[in-house]
Image (cartoon, rainbow, N blue to C red; front, side):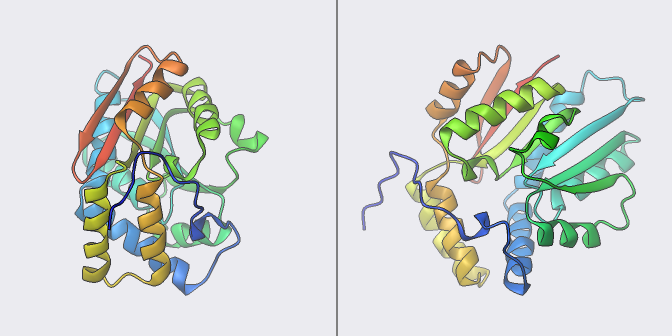
Amino acid sequence: MFLNTKHRTDKPEIMDDFALEGEILREALDKIAKINQLLGGNRLTLQGVKDLISQIDSTRTITIIDVGCGNGDMLRTLAEYGLKNHLKFDLIGIDANNYTVNHARKLSKEYPNISYRCENIFDKAFSELKYDIALCTLTLHHFKEIEIVSLMELFNSNSTIGVVINDLHRNGTAYRLFQALCFVFRLNPMSKEDGLTSILRGFKKEELVRFSEQLNFSNYTIQWKWAFRYQWIITKI
């Protein structure tokens, strides 16, 4: 069956319900994290952070926020990298779902430099938060274009070093490959439906370029990476 990926879909995802909770959500969060690990998603975001801090004084504390942090897997990856390389990271996970935040806290209890905040990123409290680096891994596609422009403007304004976006390439091949992954990983119906919708809410490179030009980003890179991801880095230094 022909799949039209020319335009982003407006179809909502089940996980966009901030009141969602329970075992099905926990399983979905953990499997998403596992798949992201296996497909190199965490490595892609970590490389973006490494690129941004390559010219930064290694003795200073670097505050990094992860927007839409899920079960906190990316933050734990960063904490372990920082510990191994003698870097001082203050890591903050942001998610609007209280159940998700509590699950992430439980999984991160051995990491003293990770904290979590249950916040809607469109609320005033988040707009006042300052940080060095903002991360958005598989989260930006959840928003409409007008919201994306507003959020990227905020991330750029409130960060001192830069922003790392890791998100999906809207592509028919990616869609079909995810259908196969659903079978291999035995994803529950919610994870399967949301995953396929996520791909259709993903991006084409020209859309990310357009956002960058609209926001007057002067120093940015957009690179396609396996598996059907775009790494979008905005540098402020």
